[in-house]
Amino acid sequence: MFHKRITIVKVDELPVPESRARTRSLISVVRAKIQHKRSKSNNIDFPLEESTTIDANTTLDAVLKNTNMTNELIDFSSREFSQENILLYQKIQAWKLRKDIETAKKLYDVYIRIGAKEEVNLDAYVVSEVQTCIKENPEGIGAAFELVENLLLRNIQDTFGRMLNSQTRS
Image 1: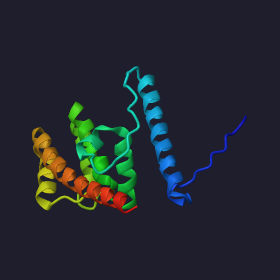
Image 2: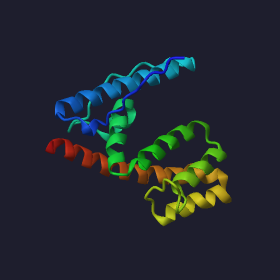
Image 3: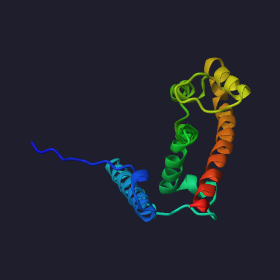
């Protein structure tokens, strides 16, 4: 049996800024190809997104609609320890397609509940609304998640602004 040896290099440890940008671009292409292969294996034909970089003219909406740019934003937010905002936003978008209560409970337990493993920064009123819907009024969970989604977008916009500022300084 043959074993492949994989060497992992952190992008931030590369010595030359051009190398880091090139590596990030390659990572984005590889991620897109993996996503494309996964979608093909599920008999779903999604076109490969073109590799796009984020600049001062890029909007948050454009970033959230493009897998490569979203991954760039997730990479940046993970360095700030705020990636849970984007991850929960993505999971709520996926939840909207099925709207099942079990998934809503999992999202609440992992991201929204006070003291949750990946707790997002939400105000107490919104957390209370989601908790009430989960426990007493499952029909209202869509409206409660809409409140969560709006706060997440505000948090993500802040992160995105810091990302753009950090790019202009480099």
